[in-house]
Length: 346
Figure: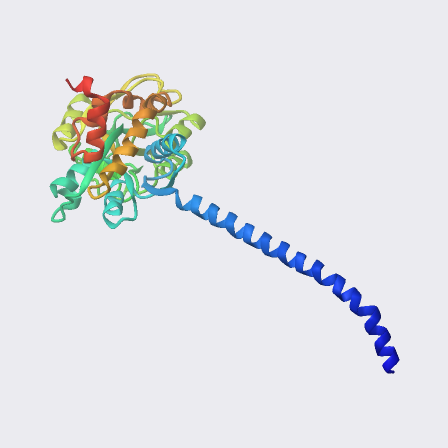
């Protein structure tokens, strides 16, 4: 037995001794690989940590706020790939103002009439004035668009009395503008026929016959309404001159504007309506250098943004961007505009 053990020892031990270096090398290789993977993960994490993620509050995904925010976010990221955006749909301006206050949003699209109410503590913001709302720039004019099917007997907005219409999401700028217009025209905006619906879903309800018309207070053409007009023969409802003046008298932030023929598929005539600027807003406490940088990137992108379609075309005009706003420009935006457009301001 002892002889057998000595024999095994002489045979096996040398093999084991030869295998040890291989195991050690394999261990070293595995350790080096693990260390390399950890270093790569750390570098990748560091790269991700270098990104600035910003949230933009918009409105109904079938409306212009969402489309405009997406265009601005894409333009900024194209020029600074360390900035990323989370674009969220909301019920619109009033929700977005609250979202800036609660830090749910870093930037937000806000209709100028809603911004004016917030800054002045009236209307929806009665008794809860928002003093920290600031503008980065105006982006596009929101227009009152009422769309109906061509075979409808409706011609003017005032013909909606006793009829059914989708007037926008609850507490949205679209709903508020519709109610102000209806009230100025002598109709009860709380009548059961006037219902809340998103712009896209409201357009679908017109197509199915559930309602007679849909309202949108957004940049024209409104995506959801344009889709309806592409698939069905439609026309825009009109305001008489005296009716339009009553609406303008009721809300100082509104101004007269025309939806040009051809804006919507099949639209053969200009339609006079009212509008308001739609603003890109932030909170007053957003760092000045951050707003300055973002505004600079937007300025760099202005030619491209203005060429994307009629909705953003007015961004090519510096006076549209920074004048006649219901709230103060953020200091970062103001400094950027003063540097970029010094000649235009003289």
